[in-house]
Length: 237
Image (cartoon, rainbow, N blue to C red; front, side, top):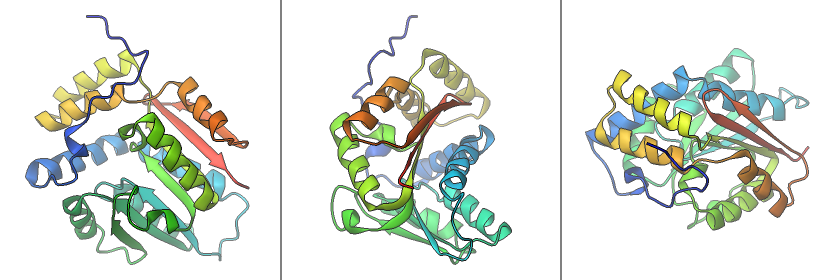
């Protein structure tokens, strides 16, 4: 059956309900993190961080914020990287779901440089938060165009070094391959449905170029990476 991916879908994911909790959500968060590891998603975000830190002094404390942090897997990967390379990272995970944040806290108890903030980024004090680098790994697609413009302008204004976006390519091939992954990884119904919607809410390269132009980002790169991802790095240095 033909699948039209010309435009982003407005269909919402079950995970967009910030009041959701329970074992189904926990399983989905952990499976998403595992798949992201296996498909190189964490590595892609880490490469973006490395690029922004190329000329930075190792002794300087670097504050990195991860938006839509899920179970905190990306932050733990960064903590391990900082320890291995003698870097001083202060890591903050942000998510609007209390259950998700509590799960991330439990999984990250061995990492003293990781903290978490449960907050809707469109409310509260988030827009006053300052950082060196802000990350969005498989999170930006959850937002509609007008909201993406709003939050990206906040990200850019409050970051000292830059922004790293790692998100899905909107692609019929990616959609069909994910259907196969659902069988291989025995994903629960919520993970299956949300994953397919996520791909249809993902991006074409031209979408990201248009955002960059509209928001006057002058120093940025957009690269396609396996597995059907875009790495969008906006640098302020």
